[in-house]
Image 1 (cartoon, rainbow, N blue to C red):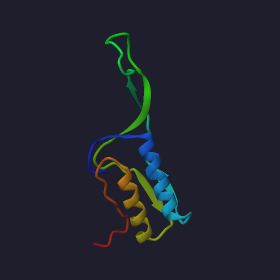
Image 2: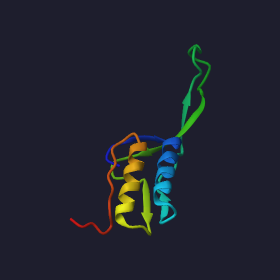
Image 3: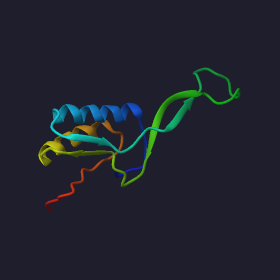
Image 4: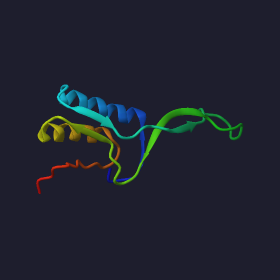
Length: 103
């Protein structure tokens, strides 16, 4: 990640599905974040007070430098395409890193 913020569980799942469909069971995938922060909201047209709202969704807090997904066992070109699809599902700027970078 290059920005900081919250990623909801639905966004994480959409990125995971995009990567798995692009890889076609050619590699192994690890999710490095987990949505552990509850996001609450009050119902619409409710007066102020009367306590906190119900949990509406779960989110993961990400900071710059956090790794979201990790892939192994596939060619780098295939992984690059999978990560570009996953990055389009996420609300923040992302960058792909490679352990064997060819500069």
